[in-house]
Amino acid sequence: MARSRFPRLDFLEADASDVSALRARGPSDKIFVDVNGSRELQMLLPLLEALDAALAPEALVVKNAPLKRLLMRASLVDALPNLALAPSGDGALLRREYKRCM
Image 1 (cartoon, helix red, strand yellow):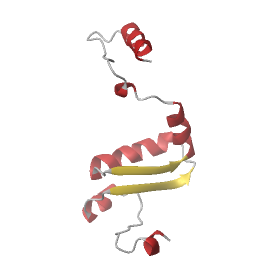
Image 2 (cartoon, helix red, strand yellow; image 1 turned 180 degrees about the vertical axis):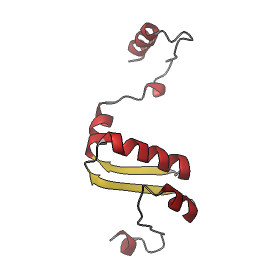
Image 3 (tube, one colour; image 1 turned 30 degrees about the horizontal axis):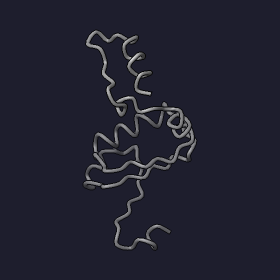
């Protein structure tokens, strides 16, 4: 369906775990990963890290329910203003600064 809607784009259907074959094909701007939508994060995250490291795509789009559930509860700590880790790794300072930013 996507090929017919966007005939000028180059689509590749491949085994995402074969990172060396994907790298040999050349760069990819965007990678869409569909692993049945329900794979455990223990399997998915190493795969995503390998794809990102090998191909450095502009976007990595993933269809996965456990990842979505995790990200819906997550916050991007480094996106908060004035948040800095103490040189000593003081977790209390991090919590105090986080609360102040919220």
